Each structure stands twice: as structure tokens, then as C-alpha cells.
Amino acid sequence: MKRLQFSTLIQAPREQVWETMLGPVTYRIWSAAFMEGSYYEGTWAKGQRLRFLAPGGSGMVSEIAELRPHEFLSIRHLGEIKDGVEDTQSEAVRSWTPCFENYTFGQVGVATELTVDMDMTEAFEEYMTKTWPKALSLLKALSEARAASPRP
Image (tube, rainbow, N blue to C red):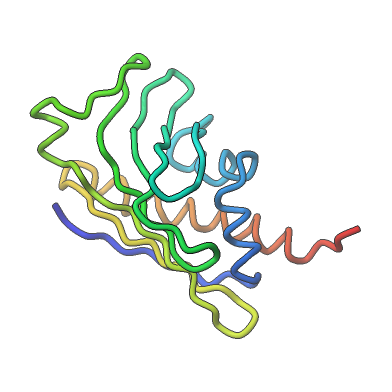
């Protein structure tokens, strides 16, 4: 298991970036970099389970390990989902679980430095190294557009 890190500076307040990253509509937009049609089921609260899913019903089952709104989010990945069935016990799954995906929201003046640290197996390292910058670019564009638009 290897720890990968990605980061971007977003010209928007931390609260705006947080809401854009986790909102169900905007999540689908920026996470499309990984898989078109990606979505989640569950609640963003410490100890709660989340299912990160592709349109066909496959994906990952995870739980929120730590959550400090607008500052830090830690997701503990517990297993995979195939054909709607969760697998947290097979030898294949236990070879890489639990692994963590952590988001740190640092304040830099009025901007946000978003840093993603994630545990990754060698099999997915190249894919994630190529895809995370695309996802962060989408999240940055969404967050900055929302921050620039006037609120009623």
C-alpha cells in the first residue's frame, strides 16, 4: 500500500469548497473524472456508512472515520460492492482494507488549499495519479464558479 497525495489551491472559502465537494449534485460532476455517473448513498457524518457507486451498482463501501466540517474529512474504505452486494470479508478485499482517503481544507487568505491523501494499491496507482488532477480541476472550477456567483 502506498500513500498518494494531491493538492490544489481553490479561490473560494473552505465552506464553499466543502459544500461543493460533498453536495449530491456537484459531487456527481467532479467525480465523473473517475467514472461518468458516479454517485454516493449515505450521510456525511462520523461513523456513518457511505456507498460510492457507479451507474451499474458496483463500487465501494466506506465509513466516515473523522469529520471536522470545513477542515478535515477521513473516509475509511471497508470493501467493494459488486452487483449490489457488499464484500468486506473476502481475501482479495482484506488485502487492501481498511485504507483511508483524507481531505484537508487549509485556509490560505480567502482561498482554500485542498489536499487529498489516500492509501492506494500499486494496481490503481497509475490510474489515480492521472485521474485525481482531473477531478480536482473540476472541483476547483465548480467551487470558484459558485463563489463568484452572487447569492440572492
